[in-house]
Length: 517
Ligand code: HXC
Image (cartoon, rainbow, N blue to C red; front, top):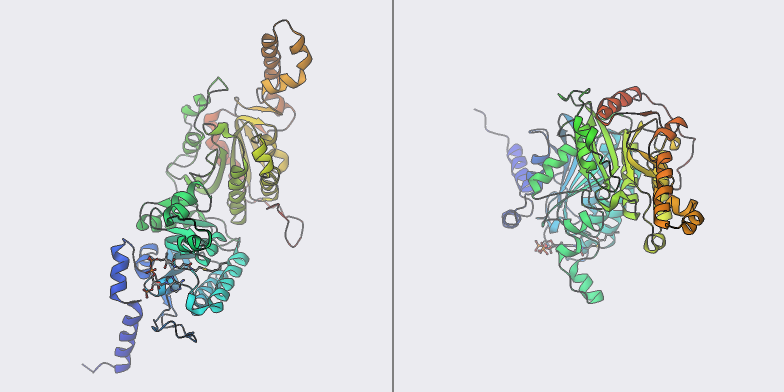
């Protein structure tokens, strides 16, 4: 047996040093918090044995101020490529055991390198974020490093999917880069996102606040609308990331992957034929409608806790990825307010840039009236949704299940915004407004002068409802393509999306539009 080359032994020893990150003590501290190391997390994310690391020997060479005495191989981030369900992806995982995963010039260099490779090869980029933000010791160099990342985040937006999994405190730039990406996944009680942390807030404003109530997952899932999904543990977050990737194409010139389903495309669920109550003031669950129509177990709701009057999520129909948008009539009657408009707009645009067809379920009495909404800019926010639907060139199908009043009819993927196929259920009411409101305006004098005003109002409202409280007037005027039984919806949508698969709808050339943000 020949003696082993000492240079190989040296390589092994340097590699082991790189793998040890910030050292055993810090790894144990990380484990004691229930958190994995960067490499453990990558192993959980990728198909077994597919990870190939890049630049593990990079160290930070900036310490002019003498404030960072220790040098660590890898410099606080593990980068490389691997596969998820056999498809290539590029990853970076910040290593909290090295200077709290903070961003240095060299860390930025490593992250930008995998981002560039991801773009050049048309593959998703996934960041596992656990970082105290800009590395204080590096000053401008770390800030410039973030700028390099942000610029790529913006320029690669809509070209390759960008996903951030927040696995620890994510301060400053560590929160901003994810905010520029497509999907943010958080872990309850473990990940926090804020621009300025509790200590800085206390120093500047005197306000005392803890990290959880400042930027925990509950806040970003239900109040700020910044995060898209949250899980109880980091293992669940990583598993969910694999699932999220499965709905996306690898880049904007591919179609999303097809997933074989045992769910019959012709399946008709009779439940749907009785789900919309006869009494228009009663509600029902649009979530149930969606779950019943799409491929079984395929619906992944995005931002389920924020602006709950609107629903957005990824699903499959006949094995094909689709983006679902809808109203939840059991929450605020499905009205469209500022947050709902923002939530739906962003989702429509995400699906459009990644060739994911849009299916819209409409049941909304319109935009939320009131001073606070008007002063908050509902015109501007609602305009975003009109803009997004009008601009989207992916196949678009709409199903009006019940109310499509006024602005809600127009905005929610109506036929002349460029929707390809529009269906209505027999329970659809397509009108400028509800019957009572319309009667009050149209027949005000008759109602005021009648001996029994209330009876007169009911009579006039009934007249109006007879005309517009059904989809036949809209169908007769060519505003919807067909009136279908609710239980036929699944097969009708699958057939529509199949007929629209090769849709070609080029937009007029321009640098980019000017969406009202
Ligand atoms: C350098 C840092 C650091 C930082 C943490 N560390 N933050 N080193 N620069 N920004 C180091 C600590 O010194 C420590 O080193 C190790 O990371 C772990 O930190 P701890 O404080 O011990 O951990 P923990 O108690 O869990 O608290 C983590 C934390 C906290 C919440 C992230 O450290 C913190 O608040 N840090 C500052 C966050 C911040 O304000 N960042 C600047 C953002 S500004 P040792 O050697 O002990 O292991 C920014 C600008 C971007 O990012 C521009 C955007 C537009």
